Length: 329
Image (cartoon, rainbow, N blue to C red):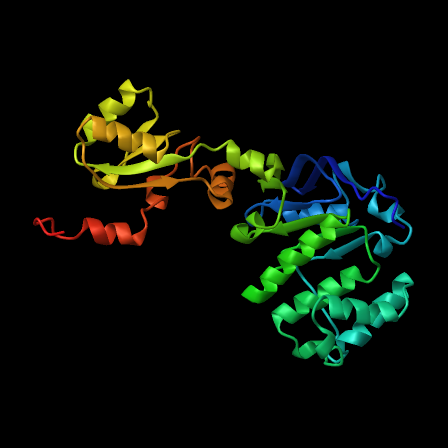
């Protein structure tokens, strides 16, 4: 069942529900050997796209393939692709082991594989408990075990970290990365951006059913310039010195602060010293995945400048600046 490919291709995919356009002309490719994050706010079309990929929803236009074939042409798809969708249901009185045995029989894998995947997802000690008593995190692990029964080439996960505690999230991240390192494909949908940032190499960022960005995460980070936030004794004097040195991307912020885009703290500090401007505080600010996500999906951030109301200095800065300046050290 493993043909050495594992490639997922989405090409000009469109889905409308009546007058509502859920997905519009969406195209991207997920290559084997890496974890690809499928990101977007609620209602962006992520789950609809995954359902079209898995043959659960018929596209209005375009297509989605796994190993060059639509899902319904894969023969025994459970041996090629494993999927965990957001809504999972289990018979409450059926044990985890028996639940998995039913699915194992359906896709033609031996019962021995059941114990393997239970161990793999950390449910071996709960194998004979009824799924009805499982926590949300345990249910997520059982859903993942079900997806892994066929030793799939491709893993499609929709919000897999829901209900997991911090230890479980770290475990999931390590699992996905190790799975991809074996040359397999992982496509993971999530809105937990801080977690995804530590897990994925590629990202597809979706907004209103359209791809706002598709490519390497590192390339996306590099496209966003950092900036230096500084509180000088004489803002205008420092601005003049900065402009004379060629730093023109300067923004006024509240409380006498200024933001200098494309500069390093050492450059700003040296120019302030040469201009005899005292510096009461300074720090670097770099875009993380969450900031870029909001920039692309909601317009909250514009270009290379960040919304000052969303970017406050560290709490200890406020404490320092609010101390009485009466000559004490």
